[in-house]
Image 1 (tube, protein in one colour):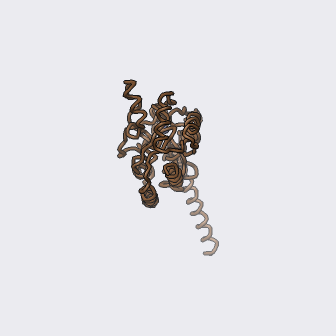
Image 2 (cartoon, rainbow, N blue to C red; image 1 turned 90 degrees about the vertical axis):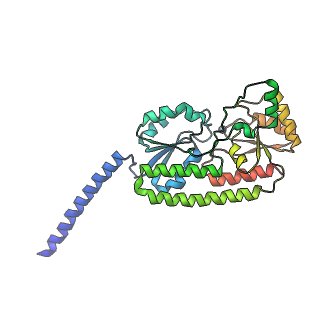
Image 3 (tube, helix red, strand yellow; image 1 turned 180 degrees about the horizontal axis):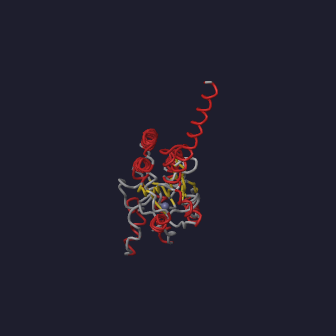
Length: 313
Ligand code: ZN
């Protein structure tokens, strides 16, 4: 008598459990913004941030990136499809340092999904003036022409500093804990591991750059001000205030480059290499590509450091 009843009980209770589970799953996925695969969708402005969110969020997050590979966060315009992709996001991690893309679009992006938690990755980061890493030639040019300071003032490229990225990752982690408290210990453990990786990276770059005598490097677009600041280097940029250099400035720049024995002009995938090729020809040097917007931050910073160091020797 017992034998047929027991399996029936089990099967009834498991059916109830499964139904209850499905119901719960539906409730969770509808109310908390989890995707069907139970991951938390996080939107970010630029690719390096996707790397930071993935480092902290691991397999608990899906990342949506607004500025696609090859596009510039100074000029990019969002597509309607990208707007729609925010509908499912629980959190938007903005760079927060005054990058033009966010100044132009942030309000519209938030309007798509007012429930998103907006995290400012730059909270706690000390912004530095663009002018701090400006070339001597640019300063002379401004003094002579009597021109107003034509930079926006503060350098928005905060993510190209290992030390800043630790702050950004902490802000991202705090945001993830707020939208998905259930996985708090998972996020905190990932953050601790990422901090270790970043500390190792910072130590390696500091050591490797310590004894370099010539500390000036030449770039088209001034993305590397915070990198230069961290390691006591000097970034000279062709672009002035987001514009192609004028002829007289080019001439000064060429002289300055020759003076400092600079043989490399760094270009980036997002910006024209035209003026770089012209300068490289004048100084008998070469054009080398470094990417300020790679998704793999740690690997990319090693690559940038190696290339910059090589260019200064
Ligand atoms: Zn830039």
